[in-house]
Length: 119
Image (cartoon, rainbow, N blue to C red):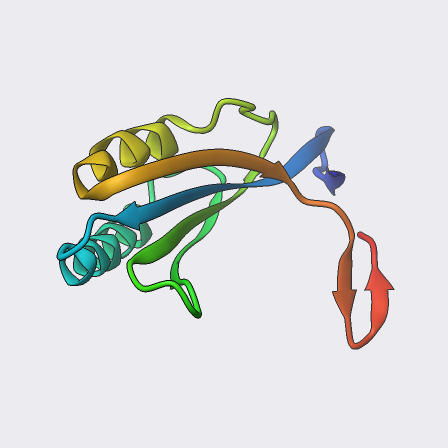
């Protein structure tokens, strides 16, 4: 979804999108994988040079042990349909822990308090 950001000199269209890197860790590597993901997200958050990166999170599956998702939330001028360089590098480096799936999603409408909140 495109958003207009007003600037005194010009209007700029901002694209909100996210990358999801899912990791299904190999048996016996669940704890190591979770620790590595936590460290990676902490390092990504520390690096303020990432233009357009709003947030980085890591989650674990509610019912499948060893299944994790690292998400990178972006606001950029252009969508990177194959993913960011950061996302592609993270996905590649996480393959040592098990199966990896890297996908890119475009943000649509949001629900807030039961009402649709389209920006």
